[in-house]
Image (tube, rainbow over all chains, first blue to last red):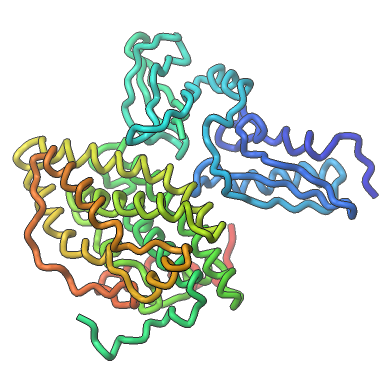
Length: 161
Length: 262
């Protein structure tokens, strides 16, 4: 018997990314769909940011746990790859939270170059546009390493994908 | 050389789409393992991080491809069973990816050859009539664009750097180049799948690949080495002695503790 007042969509949407704990899976665009069938089975559809993102297993189990705790007994989490996730799916709210947390949000994806170019990455600490990429690969698959020339602080930036 | 003794590869009993996914998955899995060996050994901390990230992308691609191969095969083998419970003769990766990591020059030379190839392959596979393969490829192609860029930037730095870095980059190219032809070898499986619009005929990629790699080498003041091609045969389960050692390390935990989780 389901005795809950919060919709399964709202419950799933509040689950946070274990590697970017300020962001919810909804902010990130990782949560694609939440559907409830006639038998009360909740089917949650998620998509990985990167094929090898190790946070996916944690996100899957966190969503199941959150829904169980909210009273939904039968939960299935399924992963889809199509259409492929893009940093353009990070919501405006998600971008704002990233910046607040000290991570530069990604610039919009442009087609054409060898890799999507991050133009004008601003330092999330001092706001200076005078920044330099130190490595295209950062602490997680989705981030690059930057350093600010103005305040000399190193910082992470979500790279456009 | 095709030897009659090895005419029957172990994987051909699988349905075509499964055998094909297994090939691409094995390439990604084995190279992922080789790159992971660099963690804590790379020339600088950023490179530890970069190579680990590239390795992780490949591992994710391998998981998706092996899981799909197992599902299409329908014999109850999941991604773990395929990764950890096959012997070397049942692996169908190309020999290029199993070569020992060598020095940083060799690793970058291999990354240049393989990532350039893999990106072109995935770009075409994204239009496959097989929706799962198309989805995996479209996702992976965006990741591999970063791998190509990484290998390109390092080839330029090493080629145009010091006499020492140039010499090691050149030696790396000489070591991996014999294994380049295998990337483009078509066989009855790829012929059938290409005709059905499911797979990619790898021989179609050669011209575009030659142009891309030659362009990078030229800019890096390096030359394409003149070397004899290796015998090849990875797709038929024929491997260098190095794969068995890699698998022994990769599979030991799973075989010693079947089904272990933590």
